Length: 180
Image (cartoon, rainbow, N blue to C red; front, side, top):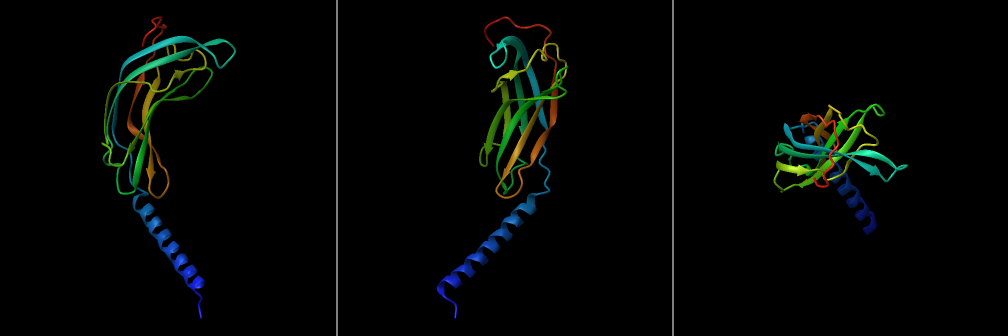
């Protein structure tokens, strides 16, 4: 004869097995879905300053300011297994000291139920665009790319890059004005 604890243990183990199977089913139905959408990025203003770098040995470093527009329709990414999207705009460039530099300039979280249409005008960088030296001055190939992490209810966190980017040339001279 089975005791109450033995029956409760069996019921609990069976419930966990069913929940694990349902969670795997939730994951597998959306695991191979294409999550990339077209993105349009436009840059309206680029400014460059040479400022004192307080993190190192009293040298000066480049500080870039970028004003940009981003347009994207993220509606097709959202399905019943997507909880939220973590969007971020990054800049990639190379210098003589580093073959690859990546800097996150802006980010945003879009929750399920929020408007998935991204229409941003005249946005400024949310984070400082510092270079560890003078690699931004005169750099002709700073590429801005919008990427996102899909945060699902169940499954892996895919990192997706939008199918649109823009290469921005930085100026050859530094700005001396105080405002941006």
